[in-house]
Image (tube, rainbow, N blue to C red):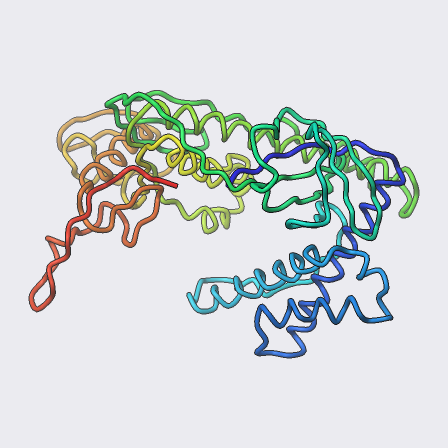
Length: 410
């Protein structure tokens, strides 16, 4: 599935019609969620049926203006939140389980059409929304060309509102695969805060720190907005400026993650990295902002995605003791987080702490290749680097079959 995005260019009246559609989609989603709260035990299809009840209700005449498939998409979003809550409860995950909440704010709102409610022009440069809100025709501004794909391949069209305007996202049913020449190289990555990552060859990538660099401007805009009167036009203006600045930071972070992940995947035939629980790590109030600014989870997601695209094996290994173990002799050397140089008292091996960890990560990934439990794209049924099936007691049990580490495929 590919997602192409283009900015919508229209008039102020058209934007107001889009706002009405976005508010209606949010209303349907909240109504379905309330219906589930009041009638426990109902399922996904009951929420879809409830959309028809809302459309026929004379108290909400604006709901019928929204396309029927767009109403069903809003109900599906409500059910996704409910299903995620049930899944977290079943897994007995730590902390809050994510009980579904009502959507209140208009910022970053969206409405999703499926196969109806929209129409593309012949030159694929304009889109017309044909539901009851009569938003009309918008020009598509972007670098993506839809001429290479059939209209039947577009499964969904999502209209998104951001701080700097309105966007149309086209979800295409396309399998993306690209060929590359094998490099016969393997690489292990150790992410950090001093450097964004250090690989097993000793090369480092600087941490961009996008939020830290923009923090001064963000504080200035936030301070100016706080001095304005609530409900005034000045407050709306500065709120929009602040939102645009935050949007720029998030786009810089994503752009860096995408480009870096692509370069890493194309440079090796196997990429190993730590299976970090970033959600737990950000509980450290001293490092939470820096860890969030580094966006390790986003970088890992793109590494796994490009691994599938280019046919490169990506392996997630257990992070336990990767910084403490010596990559030379394997002995454990205790050290605090402030100690940035690894010095082994057993074999005398001296190396940068992150470089030593990257070598241990690669070694764990290579040691588990060919054993059960190792999958591509970071999916593991047990931490890589732990006890292999051959080291466990198999008395009275069926011997597990070995599974080779294959390239990911879509």
